[in-house]
Image 1 (tube, rainbow, N blue to C red):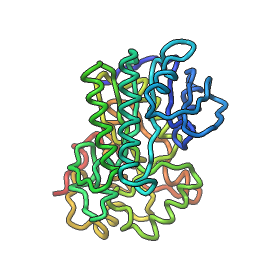
Image 2: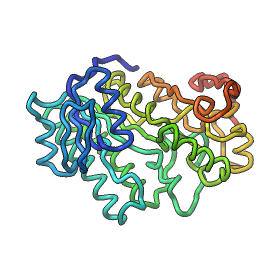
Image 3: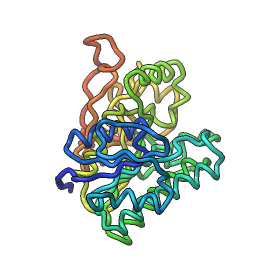
Length: 315
């Protein structure tokens, strides 16, 4: 069961110059937090109390920014990472990501920070990025999906989740690893939707999932203020796909034979977000009609999938 906590007074955000990081800084500042924003490249953010340039994998730099002139921060949001396997060699991607996550979370825990959120990915299962193109074991995708990892980025995210559990076990710091799907702003999502609708087979293995960047930032705030104690992996996604056909029809065409644990409804999404609702009290607010469709053109309302009895399992 979740419990509400106060917004942390002082928060370190790594990767603060990135898309999600910048939105998180704005959201936390608006909620009243004094944000220390760290990124590898020079940047500016009007919502940050301090803006620093440094490497999240450097223990001395991380210790310095965690301490700060006002004392040790109250919480950490770790978003710094190489975000795609194509952005470096496998060794560079894996080493950069896992070293940074361990450095930030372990150093924060050693200094007594009791709350942390870290960015995982829908790719932690390995299925979406896998060059062998395996189908998921079932839909909707959830945090317990069997993995099939073939690339260094997906492996790094799986290791990051284990790092979160280790840090909680060793130091007692509460950590939430958020499995982000494809995250973008409104303009980019229009392009993503056009691509998904023209070639649904390209993204079927991630369940045509997506999340607006403002919802991603809201999920981070919810993880800091509502998550219960412990180490938790939480899947995120919008509640509807970006396709222009019913989800059941799309699955029949592009994922025949894949078991469906919950029957799809309308254009319902294919990531099980019941854990995000139960632990964080989080539901996204952006939907395809608000982003893409003609005014008034809304699909049928999508019921809350946490009430599983109302939605029979398809075997």
